[in-house]
Image (cartoon, rainbow, N blue to C red):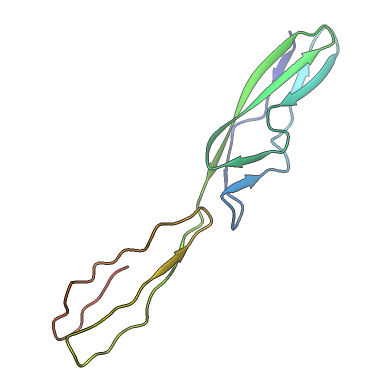
Amino acid sequence: SPQATIPADITINTDTGSCTVLLSTAGTVTATDNCAISSVKNNNPGLEFPIGVNQLIWTITDTASNTTVLTQKIIVQDNELPILSIPADIFSTTCSVTIGVASATDNCGVGTPQNNAPASFSPGITAVTW
């Protein structure tokens, strides 16, 4: 069977605005054998990976059809912060206040923004955290 060295594991952020990463390369496999190496292939030739720990499985085959299979980890992280849009500050002379709705976007999806607004507001300043 071929003797091979695969590239080191890769830890990388998602592409901007995407929930995946598209690698231009995963590195170079080096292989030797007493017969010639006929192929070096992996299970994801498009090199697009989602968030999480992904396994890139390399299969190295010689001309006698002997194979060596090795696994490289591609660890994809989402470090892109969500974007939060909140309602404008409210100045009211009454005790009845409607604070409005916030919205959020993110490259990997996001839930509905929550806040700590009280059910009713007392006179004075009340900070609402979203």
